[in-house]
Length: 259
Image (cartoon, rainbow, N blue to C red; front, side, top):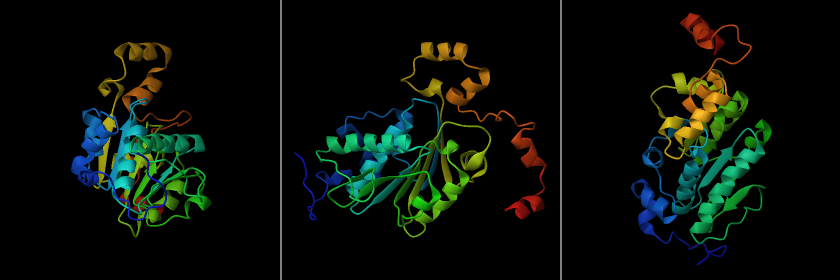
């Protein structure tokens, strides 16, 4: 059964799916069988989540499911997704669209944003470009997702954060490491206890065969393998000194002056 737009009295077909405790049942309803770490991520109640994981673990898929659960169970929700490229943010929305279809809802855009999903309860999932001026146009965001956050610009992250100021919204940062630089690295290493940190290496992913990892070890450099599959932050090429050593050498007064 599909739902037509707009039925303002529409409510989720399963009232029991409205709590975080029931999100795993919601996932199974959508034919998604989470592994233990994915289940832990789906059910976290922390408002700030940073996911440092290997390639091909399914970080976008599991986050898309969390976004759809929020949109489906809370009318008028706004979920915003951004990434370094439109292709990446568009892929996230397409994964969310697949989950929406499994709910029996015919996906459609919101009529304003080119890459978006509007649900019958007026909730929206919207992809925004990786540009500061465009990203500033949203407010009262319930969930902000930054995909491939290690490659996103710091000024974009600064522009995005105020979207959550009045909504008590959640923020999820997803990425594989990309050097010891940028807001993703800083939050992972020194963001404080407010952040729920989830780290998943390739050896912890049941969907990546050991044989594949052995082949990758032979065809990539040791540093590349540690970064892509071991979730390690590697000093970028061209850096004469390790940024961590430089940071430790700066006095507290100097750090305050820099801020």
